[in-house]
Amino acid sequence: MVWKLGDILQEKELRFALAPKSNTQARPTTPEIAIEVVDLRPRFGSRSTNLSAADSQALDELIISWQGKRWAEIQVVGHTDNVPVAPHNRQQFANNEILSKARAKVVADYIKGKIVVDQITIVGAGDRDPIAVNSTVDGRSQNRRVEVVLKGVEI
Image 1: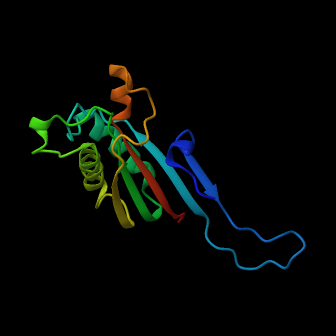
Image 2 (image 1 turned 120 degrees about the vertical axis):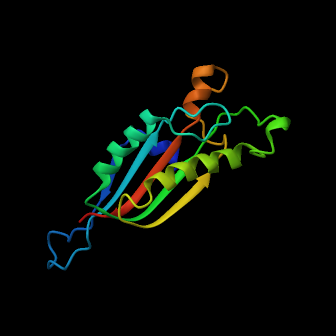
């Protein structure tokens, strides 16, 4: 089954495990696979990739909860609102997709080295998957976010 990220953001953690059927002989089972999706709401200002002290502290608390597990992959997905990057600002970020990837990279770099992970990938989704309307200041603020998808094996 393929899950669209926006469809599973309401779930903090999804777990899948393989178990033998009751009428069959028990076989060695695979380790429990854990998938955790976290929707971070750093307070990114327009055209900003800076994490505030409060955002760093909140991320540190999440990182502590992720420790003690071996993560095979972490995917960090950056998002923006739908306001295009103004032409006079395009030297910094050519478009929203590049801005969203830069936001994802900031969070990925913050996570690196603090937990055991085999691979970290970053994705810039731009304004493709809004979670709120872009017609209000509050909605645009909610859409400037980062999602972290952790896939791994419980220890």
